[in-house]
Image 1 (cartoon, rainbow, N blue to C red):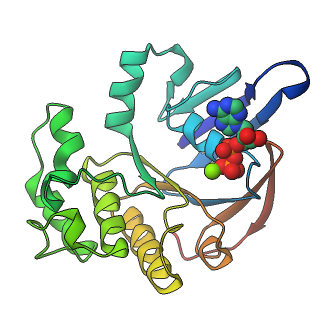
Image 2 (image 1 turned 60 degrees about the vertical axis):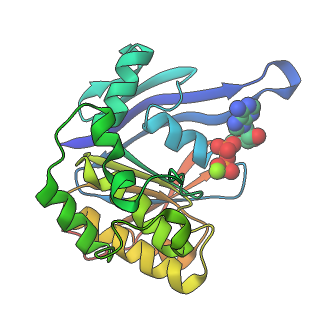
Length: 230
Ligand code: ADP
Ligand code: MG
């Protein structure tokens, strides 16, 4: 089954001469457990596309289905609930809550949704991401790479079908970038999640099953890397 399906998806900002088609007539699918990298120059529409896929933003035209659900039909409230249950987000700025511990940050979205934390699963996620022993630390006590791993753990903990990451290694040195992305890939695979990562880093794009380039809001498939995803 396809986890993501878009049909003539378009997002237009502004009017008249200043009008920008940030995402321009994009029809594509992303399969279950697939790892897709999105590359493109600054301003090409990468973040706009990712935000549309995750229901953080609404299209001007066209349709999006995530896990079989048509997002454009949902009210704001339904969309908020949909996001919490179905999509894990990882951003360049880790967006951790500074006064909460590592563990509290990781389980926060689950608790906001009023759900019971699957403590065994969360423990496994923490271990997979190399955060064991750090559960009680505050984010400020961790390195950038560690903080990003907490953000990844938070995205995985509610078991969403889809993980969306917008330049997740943009603030990290190249060694930490490779480590963090490797762990993100490994975790998504282990927990059967579909992964879409925006990146500027070619080495990271090489880890993906499929690389999509976006230029002026239009998609181009650039290569199949034939990774070891299965
Ligand atoms: P990328 O993530 O590839 O750098 P974006 O998706 O952020 O690109 O932006 C794509 C285009 O849409 C750019 O021209 C940008 O200026 C424009 N854009 C993005 N968000 C807005 C907004 N909220 N209002 C107006 N224009 C926007
Ligand atoms: Mg961007």
